[in-house]
Image (tube, rainbow, N blue to C red):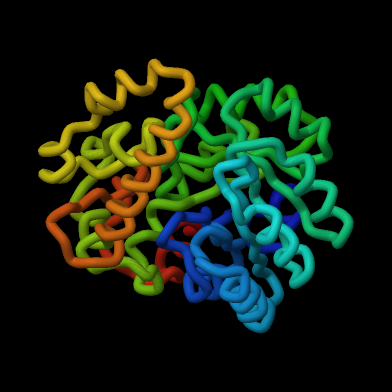
Length: 315
């Protein structure tokens, strides 16, 4: 399973444990590194910069040969902590940064100056070309089977296209839950894969047992798109509570979204409310179950340690 991604990150297997908001943590990434893959955590999972620095130091202390770790940065204006997060990561050091939702130019410049590689989330060829021109080390092809905010193209269509048009490695994100899925992505031209949802049901994930069990009990047919979390379509498990509140924006939100001067503020309020609901569902026992996941939970049949999940992906 050696590939360009394996070489880039000096890992045994070309797999990144994807960064997941509220889910990813030091324990998960530590076990991922021990299993021979890379792990990534959203910087926004830490409320303060001091907490972020502490996490980086812990991961550096836990790092072993054949494993690698990084952090995910939201690089647009919605992330008011972006500059301080980037500064902390570059000062403390890690193996790679994954950028999302904005121009990665500043991140690439500062990260490369201290020897940190930068991979960029993209959903189409236009943005993939842009990040390549900016000096990205790899493009993460977020397809329409990814969990959370996903792309519009199928894994085969997007990975084929980018691998033919780009000179940098392409990492396929979405639709991977077992070894056969990895083999498919590699056959499409991917240099590696980013896997998220299967790791929600890990012993090390810091979410409720109810959330983990939902990833076992539900499958790909139970994953639907909702606009009720961030205002942007996002994949969630179709629980009774999701069915009750519906998946479309309210008539008032739609009305306000038509007002150019108010649209930005409406999205900010919807995002704030949605993130709080998601956090409560992930961290507390509550009937308000808004659980973010992707269709790759189809292959999740038990709550396991991270190592067991990695074993299923490579064997």
